[in-house]
Length: 465
Ligand SMILES: Cc1ncc(COP(=O)(O)O)c(C=O)c1O
Image (cartoon, rainbow, N blue to C red):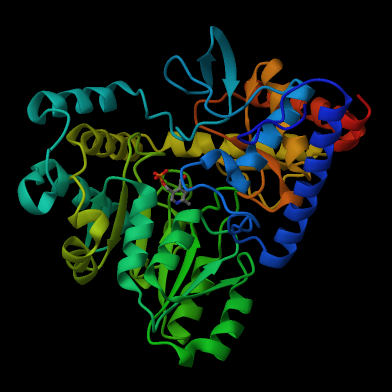
């Protein structure tokens, strides 16, 4: 055998193993060079094939073939696919997957509000009143009172004039950035920014530049050089970095953007409900006036127990987006149950600030225990995200599999989501976890990391089989 059509690498025997190893080595080399060349910005798809492929044959796409190659290697190592695992119920500190209960560190139900009785009741009442869909874009027949109610709550939470909600967090970034910027403009984003920002910048047609992670000094220097080449400049940062678990120095970023006459956008997907004493995000933590930031962005999918995204800021910004941004204008209005769930989540969060405090204690406890066990937690500052960096995508996949077998549900984050040498396990902490659960998870992780790293590279292990 060896390779079958459609990117297959199945089969047994020496020939197939050699083909697999050769393919894996080539892919490994290409990943490493791509990271060096492109920096941490997500890489472009694999280079075009030299021979002609039939338009209909997706199985011949080089990127698809690489995918099959990795699956075949994982099969040979006996590693189950960690992605698309189906949970049987509500995912909290524990979750049931395939008739077994797992300690769960893979879900961003940060304050435990998804499944909260008041949140569930509000969503059900909204369905009773409005049904499951508003059946139109809000501009035409899709507007419901619950939309404005949610937008006013979000604006109040951020301390700005107004807000607009859209049906997806990812699409909110893509559509908003894609609308606000144009060919004569520049989007400058942190090197670890989320993919949705990169896609939005690409859509806008503006020039795109990254600055080193959290480095406002480097940003300032870059702006000194390039600011005069563009009309508008948008700087985009996150309130809590979703892969690394650290926060920016917001006050400094506000100074830099003011000095260089730029707009500042802060994505609070992971910081709302998590950062700041009452969970109002990075402005609360930094003690700055939220109006110093032109664009606050957030999602409804994490602390707010639903699905969707929002932009909060000045009246003019919100009014403009509501008639101009395609992700709002040409898309259905947010489902009433999701709007209701988000409003109820904000109410519980405000009424029970001890949830935010408990999450903070849990994040710090995990971080302390992990460091004590000698694990590499990168830049994490002990909020709701703590990575354990293991230095290679295959190692991260093997580790996630080993942890799963020992009852921990943790996902590997691999290239191209992060640079190859920064592949990791990412732990999401919630207010629901207990200290005993965290201590147990760290103990098991430290044992498995030591054992996997001692075994050498996955390529070496495969070769020795
Ligand atoms: C920083 C950041 N922004 C935006 C998004 C997209 O949000 P959603 O998953 O709600 O579409 C995510 C997703 O996790 C994210 O991490």
